[in-house]
Image 1 (tube, rainbow, N blue to C red):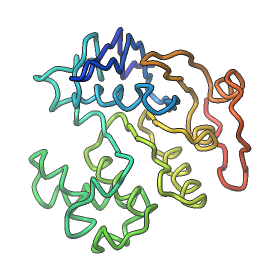
Image 2: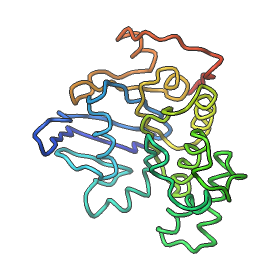
Image 3: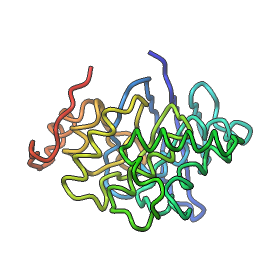
Image 4: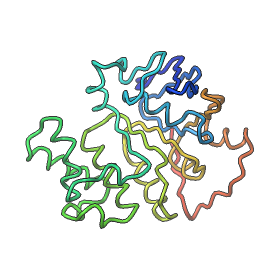
Length: 242
């Protein structure tokens, strides 16, 4: 199984001197879906921002065999797609189709090639019928799907989603869990939503004080830390993974 992400001894301080990462080691294998747990401020989002060069700290970060640096960032950003917590921050064109085609056009594709990529991505996320709609007319769940389609149109190997269930009601969470389970890309999900993680991830890591304090299956993390939650099987259908 190929290793897609390899992070070793990653350290980062913000300009005010606050230490956000204090020696993080992390791996992501092909086909994995990993949940990143931890309290706000524990380093999760700072960590994922290093994966495509939005932040640069000390240590080693490799994505698909490429060391993350100024020279490799354009190639790495084609391999790893980041879906932000607020989908509206990724939707800014007049129509859904134009939004999803924006990335392929920036890769140098012709308008015909970009449109074909966009239509295919929208079909994958179940939003083909919305191609001509304005993004601001969409529901929160539809916006999330279109934001994911915009990333899929770039044909990435890895998807990183920051708090993907924010603004979604239970049916929307259930639909998103089903969509993510069907996508072939390896995934990293920054989340506090334990039932959603159980439905979508086969491994979890727990950030605390800027380091990964524990890792294992989602079930092992829940048991180890005694997290109190009541999963509702009517809301999220668990996907069993190898």
